[in-house]
Length: 260
Image (tube, rainbow, N blue to C red; front, side, top):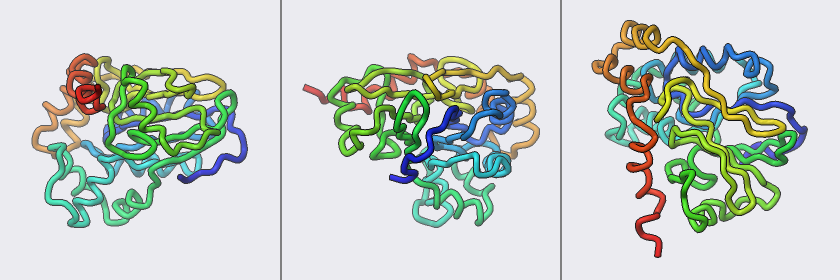
């Protein structure tokens, strides 16, 4: 675990699952409260999408205010580029991997899996992509208590808030005395259009930034050479997959069907 808590931060903006959608990222970064936040934490899956290099460049221009966590999709791009895997489950993955420079690949490879910060009103906050122990595990707003106990195993008692991403659906819930926050997805939302994010300190405020979706789709279609970009952009930016659709797919992966 990296990022031992030290100075207490007042406001932290959390951006998850950008997935290489530059127009959505630009819209969120233009939010006054994001611009004013002391830190911006990225909880993974930053690059696997139509404009990965441009998204990385924009985020790196924000300087040390941005704190990075790698997600499973970022790891898959790195492994693919390094010849450690022959395929990527996400069809756009190979295209995205090819757009990155060698230096960008190495930058992604060096990103940590977790980060802990002290945030006003929330105490020690653990940030991760999927769960604190794994970048692909699934936990949902309605996951059973025993599942949360499993994924919290090994988390320091001082951590009373856990922020994760991965499932692209925003929620806040209590699990075994810990506040769990998922900001939703900036670039590939399920269930509701817009770029989803979260503002921490002293509470946890789920936010959604509206932006011009038709213009963004036209821009991606014009600027990205991925063969199926028009269909990809229409599906994800318009949130064609509902939250109910996503829960039906993800539900079995949180172990609920094998629980006694």
